[in-house]
Length: 228
Image 1 (cartoon, rainbow, N blue to C red):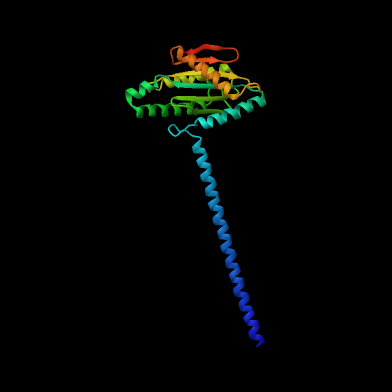
Image 2 (image 1 turned 90 degrees about the vertical axis):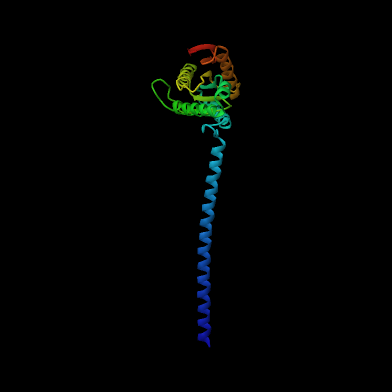
C-alpha cells in the first residue's frame, strides 16, 4: 500500500513538474513575443515621429522640424558663443509656373529644388564652408530654409549664392530669391529674431528684381551680394 502511495506521489510530482516546466516555457515565449511586439511598436512610433518631421512632397525636413532645429541650434550657439546663420529661399514666379504648366510641373520643380538643396548643403567643398550641422527644410508652399551652424554672414552669403546659381542652372522654369541673416545669439533675442531678419532680407531680394541674394545682419542691411 505504501509503495502505491509513493508511486502515486512520484507520478503527481512528475506531472506537476512537467506542467510547471511547460508553463515556464510558455511564459518565456510570451515574454519574448511581448518584447518583440513592444520593439515593433517602438520602431513604428519612431518611424511615425520621423515622418511627422518630413515634408511629404520633397522628403526633406518640414516646418515643424525646422522650428525645433532652429531653437536647438540657437541655444547651442549661444552656449558655445558661436554664430548662427539662416538662409530663406523663395521660388520666383512659382504661381506663374503652376498656372502655365500645371500643378504636377510645379510639384516636380519643388522636388528638384528640395533634392538639390539637400545634396549641396551637406556636401563639403572648396567653395562651401564645412558645417557641423546644416538643416534644409521646406517651410512653406514654395519657401525653403537652410540653417547654418557656426557660420559668419560672409560664409552664409557665399552659400546662398551657390544655392541661387545652382537652382537657376536646373532650368526648371523658376529662379530663387534668397534672404540671409547671421548673428551671435544672446539671451536678449530669440531664434525667431533671426527668422524675421532673414525674411526682411528676402523681401529686399524680391524688391531688387528677384533671382538675387540680399543680407540683413548686425553690420549689413540689405547689402547686394553675388548674383542678381
